[in-house]
Length: 364
Image (cartoon, helix red, strand yellow):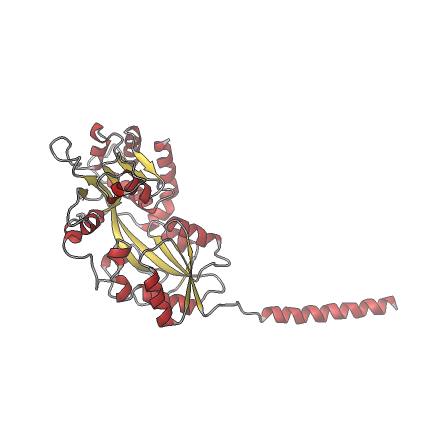
């Protein structure tokens, strides 16, 4: 009797497990086809007005998850890769992109990238990430301080290690800031190719540390709180003290554009000391991703309507070659270096950890 009961129970378990296995095998990932979830930092070009336009035209609802900057976007995307919090990831730049590609963070976007500036496609022109804006990271200098009489305008990066610049240069920590990371990468190539073969980037960063360089966690703190030739001087949080800062080669143009055509800020036009930075958007590779909705937003991101707003909103060059920086003060006060640092994102991806350790030692 007991054997008969056990045999019956065994059959029930076998049949039940087989049936459940079949059911589980037929379950499809649940995708919300009415919503586009976006992981990004506070991209000003994605204004409320622009998002409302996309939602009206496409029928999708947009839901944002916003974090601090491009590095945090990457960190969050990697942490949630197996169960993505977003369909579309926006804001990873070419100093971080190789890490994203190495971890298969994106899937193919399926778009033809035509009508874009060559600069937007220079670091990466593959099918996993779409460029939406670009700019050059470089040193900006207060010409009211470096007036050519009392203090000379720096001709190379070594000049910033002199007494005239002691405690007067602000940079961003490359571990927490994308411009800071980009500028660190630029110094690698710059000092590998300058006239002095006996020194490299480590020697310069040690010299800057000994010259009391101001190090901040992000661009806003260094530019708005410390830089004396920027619009931050009108902010309650302004501290001052810096007459040079890591920013963008077009930052003086933006200052002049909103400052009635005038600015004391100039970008140091030093060949090889700038970094061509491109920002990207990509469709998440994980399960339960609204691929069609993400593709629709990618197309909107490169639309003439949105790209035309990039110089005003995100304060960058648009990726689309149909648009450019506004003529007049914006363009006139924007520096275009003879050459940017020649350093690939593949090399950045493989060697950045070592550079960061060397930077830590220099700053200690």
